[in-house]
Image 1: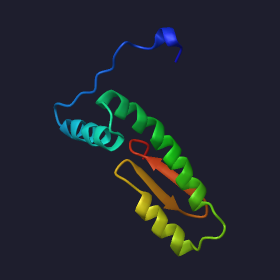
Image 2 (image 1 turned 90 degrees about the vertical axis):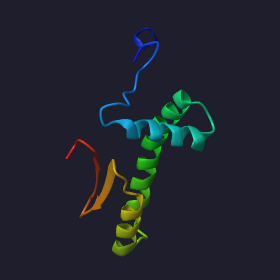
Image 3 (image 1 turned 90 degrees about the horizontal axis):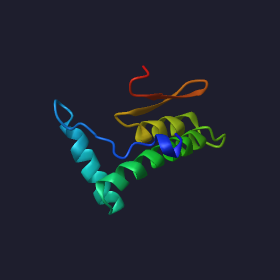
Image 4 (image 1 turned 120 degrees about the horizontal axis):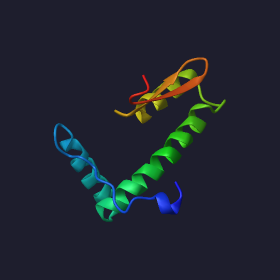
Length: 96
């Protein structure tokens, strides 16, 4: 997004069943030891890097199928699932 198109602020709804979002943001702020705005940005940047790193690990030739399954299960979350088949696939919540 071009700088002149960047909004001055972004709202995150935490009502109507989305209360968990506030708790998640608070956890991120505590984890990163920063304010909530920076925590959201850091977490958004980190998730892409972490998923790509997980893909690289799961694609390694020196791992057994069992090791790959265990790693995939360990790294899967509510929003990201690593499934092993003949090839590696990653499914994000909402893409199913």
